[in-house]
Length: 374
Image (cartoon, rainbow, N blue to C red; front, side, top):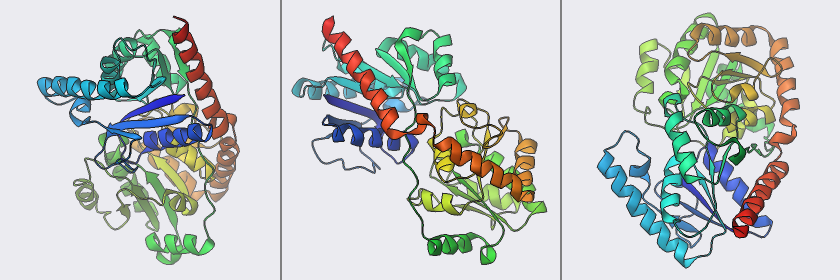
């Protein structure tokens, strides 16, 4: 098969890592994969013939000018259609709504099946996302059952939906020297509690909530450090928020990093304060690293987190999140219990890359076969 994997962009994040690892597996199985996306700030090679550069920024800007978005939509659709005419693609797999709109326009009359994976969005965008899925996709998928059910409630045909799991690789071995040095980077003599959150600096991730939680925790346990990894449109604001809260020396905003595994290996607690999610890859990575998880109950997070692996709190519940963190700091036995549960959960079949990717490939094959019969 020749498959087009189409994302809005290839900045390093959970969606992009999922797409890349799936694609690497497909290539190992003998299939061909081509990527399409906005080339700026991509963490994969964009100069070869396996990458189709498209100017997707304006298409995906839901707050932008309607004329600009529409013009960009048709411009990108024409550019992609030229590529579809020159290459023989058996299937297009789009990730999120902007690529779905472009792919649908580009493929008119070409009988190329389109799979759309919806990775979640702000709740008020669910109805429009469902509309895009209905109009543009032959199969609508999500890593989260709950998120997919929301789309179905807004008119997506249940028979044209499927839950795709999250195949996450095991965490690499990290040397003891690396761990010791990293803890000392954030904690005096490496002692205290290190709380790690790989979160984009965006409203979605509730960074303002995390700062409020950190302030309250640090009042009782000043030997705690909060470490946040990720870039985003709030990067110019978060340091000011931390300074206003008086915790600028205790919360570290690292920006995008390539050492998530190393940070997970030394963290005592994994914290996610999101306002919305689908099924966060970062939580599964925390399970792989045997880390207890405190997270907010949004999207499909409850499909991952329960009392076996950590604590689930309401969105924006600063009191609940603070108490959960304090409980885990003050009770190492509880933390150890949840760590064991997290590692056990990480071994479930729904997180195994081979199993998950095989099911996705089978879905591709079934959809392509049904299209050829029409």
